[in-house]
Image (cartoon, rainbow, N blue to C red; front, side, top):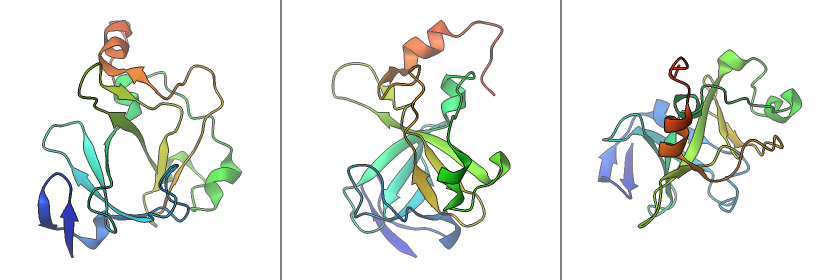
Length: 150
């Protein structure tokens, strides 16, 4: 299928790249259909809305930045998208790249995607360690040398 993207213009994507967020994402509840794309700069990804070209998010695997990251999500919260074991989930966090200031990740509001059904959900973690803005470079610099990313 063809998708108009914010970053790459009109591109052809495979159906397996489609992700449905039945409840949308926080602040974008009405936008439900997305595609997951590899970004030109690894280890980043693009989550591009199929419905609105200007709605796109840069994503990253949070464990690359914080190997000690813990998802304290109630199993019942993920059951509605069919995730009942950790192996079924892809976990991403949203990256913010401001014009000025540090690039940050939102560790408080991770995205969980069911690998099989391609349905996703954004969760809100109550663990006080995880905030909406973690400076990526500061997090990497603070990581102990003996603790490489997974």
